[in-house]
Length: 297
Image (cartoon, rainbow, N blue to C red; front, side, top):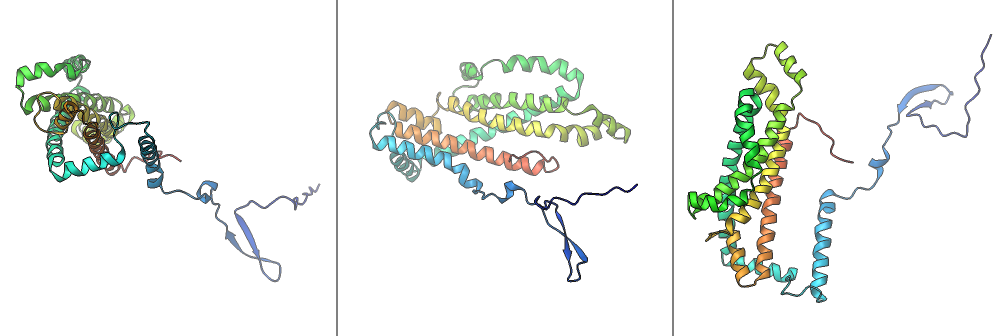
């Protein structure tokens, strides 16, 4: 019994990635591979840096338009041109540069202390059950207390110098790092622990090669949260008994109703926070090269 195959419909397009090249004699001579190009890659792509700057530029243009038409008066919010002029003046007389240096020092010290304390407590609580029993409950209680409400107590304890300001930043940084590092340690797959033990890794080897790398993504997320809270804590700290820093400039501007200076200080806060977040994200890409993740379409 023979089975006959119907010839393919000549009206249907050939979508096969492999085409047969014919020689002059009509026989196939070679197979040419035709690459399939995804439709998304054939689209004209706008540079990402241009897309990311479109939103801020649109807001800036809208701000300037509202200021030019008188909808936003200078008493309510100064125009972008006025803000730029005030920023140049503050940089020229050195007051803004000095304030930024002082604020950066406070954030750096508080971030360092908070990172050491938060990470250390998370390691003790995450790696050891007895550590969890002794550490986790007090930390969970303390993190529910608003750190801003502790400012009067810190002033009584540490005076009105730099110590209470650094203590507020340290307290704000500690808890996000603790929670994320602890969650990262306890979130490591138990099968990876069993695989490491079957390979003969010691307890320290498991911690070094399995637990800590597995907790690193959460730790980087906690660091980004901590940086945001560090700048928030700095705003509160520098507006109370401060004689230098960006917050001190804001307090002076508030007393003299200088909205343009206040906006300049807020922009500086935002710029420094964005710069710190960029540094952490760059560090995250370098440390987590072994962990491919979805980056969007």
